Length: 160
Image (cartoon, rainbow, N blue to C red; front, side):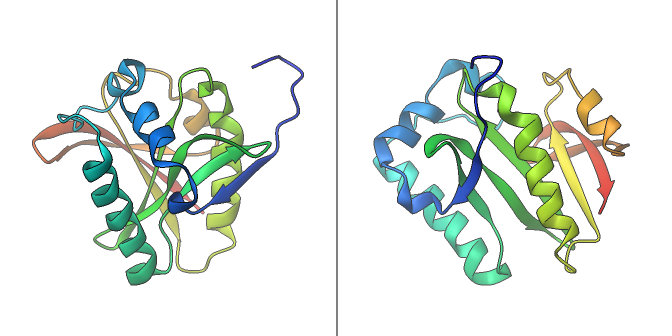
């Protein structure tokens, strides 16, 4: 991304993105390197199951994951998912778009601060994710290591 590119982050629903674009994104080895729970090949059936699960979160909780666009182009997906009584924020960007993470997190946290259902947000990061200074600068605190589906993650919490 050019240093002075215009950044215009918007959120859309996942079903609005062409399936092949999400499959290509999620099949990229650079993406898989930071997703220890990704142990399968993405195809149209897996994508349909994934999108249905994310849409069910919207139906059940009134909030879920979005397709994330920059200047109208799909750059990844992410959003909030209810994990027990906590709202967890996840973000999965396309390679070459990782630099947009700060802008996206800022916009998403602003959304969370405006939503009275979300007193705090959690982040589960794989141990391969070494760069966390941005979260710490925003006020996130390290809660500890947690096991999620047999995999260790670093858990952070940010008051909204």
